[in-house]
Length: 340
Image (cartoon, rainbow, N blue to C red; front, side, top):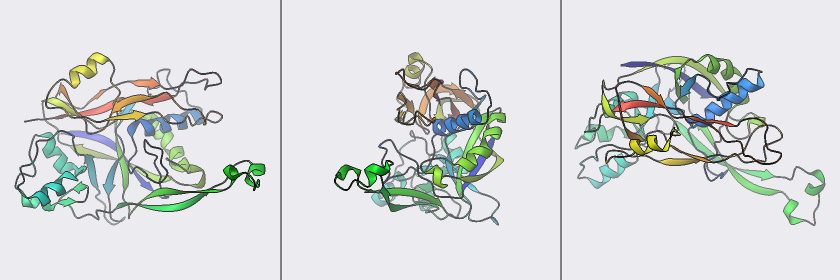
């Protein structure tokens, strides 16, 4: 059994999170750990706090995962964890049930604990199959659409006034595009686990809550209220594999080779980069790095929660580039998981 500090974010405004295609018409519904860590770091810098030379704030965080809470009267929230990418395939003879199970991306904490212990949940278990609610697996009663999105039409106008009124030049006319915005029902929202000294998180969160996360923060999108709580997760006493709760940048080629060397591993990789957000440099792209996503299962013997990975500087070495590091944290929280 392990106890963790968590931060619950209840969004008071719509949220848009760009995906890897940078398509405004599609928004992600969760926030990656490296993205949120960078936002915390930026807030600390704005407030005048000294950022450590290596970009390490003394704490590791998970990515932001969904939680369901119907309203303020319902004190207990249902917290969801990412479904590990490696699990024994369920032996379901009914094709319809198999397809339903395949859609599951999130497990409530009690079921996540059973997966960590090596239990197979679905094998001819009609009760468990009936507990699948869209992308979520839980025996609690939830609204499976507690996170939903709406696509709205927007208009883009040139920032140059003279260009905007130049009727003869088609490229400077107003252009329409579509923006996908994410909403949370009731008191639901996103949360993350923090492991280590949370002092810097506590300093940065008030400003970040007001500034917001995601796109269109200048018009109030992505703002949130937050609270700090604790969560208990039962983990195996010992296991030969580990599951990541964060975006993970390996510390060396040797490390990642040994972690992925085995049949009972499963992982997904994601390209991390994007635009620099510092004033004066927001038209410059960061360097690119690839990391393992949350839910990845690797070969690594542990008996407790650990942190692995590194923080990297993605500032491009170009003329007129930023004169400061652009940190991206790939230090990930790993939990032991039993693979049978």
